[in-house]
Image (cartoon, rainbow, N blue to C red; front, side):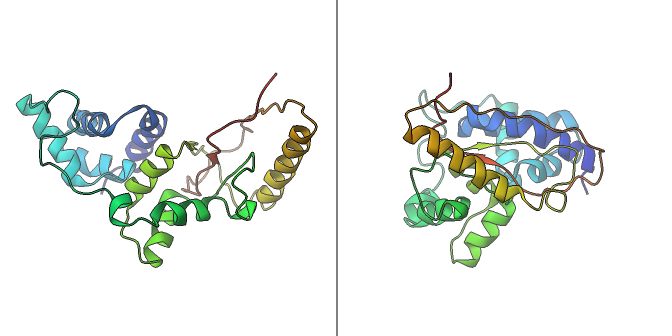
Length: 214
């Protein structure tokens, strides 16, 4: 079983890199991390990123063989399969409905959020009949323009029972200022706390288009 500290360290890096990497970049980065860890590296990287063992091993083989796909392609001709979006046209709609439940379906709301992890989102979509994994959920959120915020060494959920109420208050204030034609300034901070059990309590998803700032 992969070391929990190693998995957390890899996950922290992946969260900050994933939005700037394409498919090939993610595969190569995961392969480099796995090779640097040595024995058990593939399993550790797979657990941290949600990528499949097969994908990571493919990346390792590409690195070792110096195999490059044709220019402008992520894979060689004929590689891969149809995307989940093509196979399941209703997937995106179902995912967006799940990540913004507190906005009651308002697509123009300036703030959307969720405290659910990508693993829980994937599980709920699977319960609805979709075939999807955590890595695909993470990729789809990135394609939709949402940002995944890294978990910190603190316990959330039980310590913040009013988190949704806080977001609803902020959301209402931003909408009120926008109606008056005023700028809305978003400021985020991290409160220090005792490092305890590092639970994957979920992720905060930021809306694709931030409010204007001054």
